[in-house]
View 1 (tube, rainbow, N blue to C red):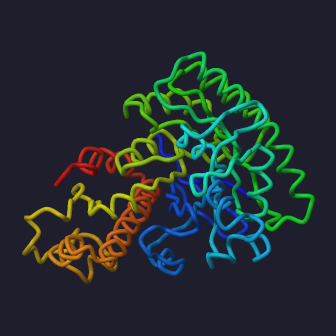
View 2: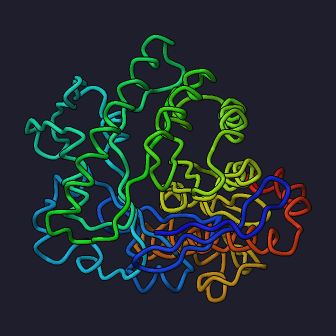
View 3: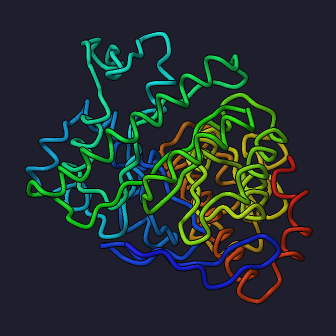
Length: 376
């Protein structure tokens, strides 16, 4: 795997990430298919048509169902879901955090009850690496301890230190897995920075993980309770210390405005469930802001969701028809809504890349930062 920054403009970076399954143009958005599928009934060919570059699947969920061994025997995740592009697998650390009532964190790993059938599961850093090796993703994420914000300093300090110790174990196991008949011999491991909303803990943790010299750096533990401006502050603190020659990945973020602000702070890669989740509730993103398609005012509206959008939905269907589908509870509403939102996100990142290429990111940033998440 190779990452190259070709250009910088007003804090933003324009690059390419070469993986065993294709080249990713950055800044890029990863489309979240937790269980090897995008919620909303979209297939792999659908995603290609919508401009999707990278697929994100989750170690925790695929380990529980159908099981990593099943996917390995069927040729790995790429073959299993018929996606020939790059795949990143999240380690499951955030899912452990989100299931706080069911888990117990110890130095060896995490013990928790399955949200599916209640069975007791013990997941160690080594297990997370073995599962991701069986899945055959191009990018495997380290197993980390994510905390909510705000949290007490002492607790966050212990969690960040444990994340570093777990990272060392992940690195050893990842290298061992590459020696024992891997599904994807080109798989790489990326580290995750933790430290809550405390500047010193973030920098201390970053210094420790950079000593392992892994090929990518993720920023985790943000957008989990803190104010947006606090998240931007942490990015401002970290940005000067992130390695210039490696991709910077902001995990679980976010709105189009969040992404724009983070690109301005040097972030290259994003993921978020928001496009699909919001679409399932009738909230569609446009260049003018966010539309709630269930609003009464769209009953007779013959316009598309966004008149400047080239997605298959906007080229074909009216606001009135889409509102009808949502109000009638038709499954087609979810599919069309998710298609539009994923197209918007991927096209939005493509426009960011174009603005950097043309030395116009500053103007793009100033033009759109206030309007993208406005409620229409």
